[in-house]
Amino acid sequence: MSKQQGSQELSADMDLHWQKQANLVHWYKKPKTILSTNIDRWYDWFTDGELNSCYLALDYHIEQGRGEQTALIYDSPVTGQKQKLSFNELTLTVAKFADVLQSQGVSKGDRVLIYMPMIPQAAIAMLACARIGAIHSVVFGGFAANELVTRINDAEPKVIVSASCGIEINKILAYKPLIDEAIALADHKPNCCIIYQRAQLTASLTPNRDFNWQELMARAQPIPPIRLKSTDPLYILYTSGTTGKPKGVVRDNGGHAVAMLYSMAQVYGMKAGDTFWAASDVGWVVGHSYIVYGSLMAGCTTIMYEGKPINTPDAGAFWRVCAEYKVNALFSAPTAFRAIAKEDPLGELIKQYDLSALKRLYLAGERLDPATYHWLKDITQRPIIDHWWQTETGWAIASTPLSCDNKTQGIQTKAGSAGRPVRGYDVQILDNDGNQVPAGQQGAVAIKLPLPPGCLATIYKDPQRLFSGYLATYPGYYISGDGGYIDDDGYLFIMGRTDDVINVAGHRLSTGEMEEVLSSHPAVAECAVVGISDKLKGQIPLGLVVIKNGIQASDAELVIILKQTIRDSIGAIASLKHLLIIDRLPKTRSGKILRKTLRQMIDGDEIEIPSTIEDSSVISELSGRLVNINQKV
Ligand code: COA
Ligand code: AMP
Image (spheres, helix red, strand yellow):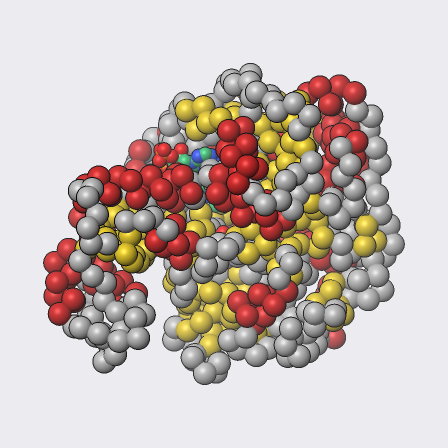
């Protein structure tokens, strides 16, 4: 690791600020040290503190007299089930599942891979790991077997926890065959799998390797939380980078707990007893931070919704849930509201529900386009807060501050902006040389070190990747991978990724990874995958493929096969619906694909043809097929 990291010191003001925030956490041992530098020359927060994240999310609230309060609501339009678990009930179940894990040999520091649909057992498994100091790694249920393989090989889990199936509107998706396939393909083999059998599908269990969740739970006894160091890892969450190998973002316990409590109060304005609904999935960082840890640590009621914004059963689903459970703040992705707006443009369905409890709506995962912002503001008559963050930070880097104006209707938001940097983040816009640019000018969105508590503690098993991926470009800064600008009033506008990452329906995916999958097909000579804009999903991938000479299959057959390869390797969420077979790609003389030129052709922008281009006639050859392709597809 470079000597440059960890050298930026915390100002006295920020040191005091984080000390005050840390005092709000119920530590077993209160930390005296706020920020220190570790052997990787990266940051440790509250290093001498001791705590347990599961205790803070559950047992602590029972001690505070909130045992009977609903902790978790499960609402599943796809199965017709609804369930409420109080803090007492959830704590008991989690404490028993912690015993189940321990009986399977899981102890502090062991990894547990969780591959679950949106059912309470997903949160129960996560919290049970936290209770015994095991490190969970949740994999989004929409990922295919190959994605599981990469994560199994990297995290080397002792146990895999899963369910017999997931349900996508009316499709039952068997999980167990994917797990079996992944384990067969992986170099690392877990000791066992614990499978929650759902009524919709019973999975067949492999003798001596797979166990039935319900049977193990029937024999389990509740066990207490253990003391952990602030810096002990809580979880690993893999996220897409620019290559096929996802990055295992590691989150600590102490910094995370402080960040969760701080953000629940200061970003979301929530207090114990409120109901907070993050309409996301436990497989994403939003689910980790605000379906599970943040909401529960703050003593709020959280909601696990196993459904979609539309079609389960209609575009009024979000409003029905908000009304039924008196949701105080709703958090989702812009794509979800674009889907609702498409089905119910005049907002007729929202009128059927009493949303008097709902104070504000929060949006993240992709840029909130001004049209959706205005539509949502009009139909809800509530503050619409776009806020910007990443798996790496774990909580909002920018948002609209509530504390400057506590009257909820007076919050000053700007359409198209993700608000202002949240206290703790020093966000700056830099040019190619690392100099700050003037207000209004676009550049790379960077955060001056140190990052606040709760941000990535390291990249699992690869601390060097933290340096090369985020810190090497501008010494003293973390580079977000997003481009944007700050206006004269200090509002941040995030305009999109500057790397090969795309956001498809709020899901972060790597075009590099898709290219690796396509290139691995024997018929493919070379390929490029670029993000094109999509009215519903924000972005979708477009594959451009050059086929080897002498391949017998027709272009139409190859298109079907290659699309299926992406579904099988990455998952249906990759949404690779558009794939063109072309004769050649625009390249430099040294063989580098000219992606920027491709994007300019697709967007119909003025094309800058680099002097290094191998053969400029490829541009005219392709332009007819690519110009405004997003309007053609
Ligand atoms: N498990 C298995 N498959 C899944 C899945 C999951 N958890 N989530 C999505 N998929 C599948 C879908 O079934 C679909 O498969 P298909 O191509 O066979 O029909 C495919 O992946 C694409 O799904 P999706 O991206 O959800 O697109 P859609 O067109 O079905 O729905 C939206 C569009 C906008 C309604 C939907 O994307 C949505 O609800 N987005 C919100 C995302 C979100 O909350 N993100 C959180 C970030 S904060
Ligand atoms: P993820 O790590 O999956 O949460 O994805 C993080 C990426 O999503 C960011 O780097 C951005 O590109 C994008 N993103 C998240 N929130 C916003 C937002 N409010 N505005 C614009 N882009 C966003």
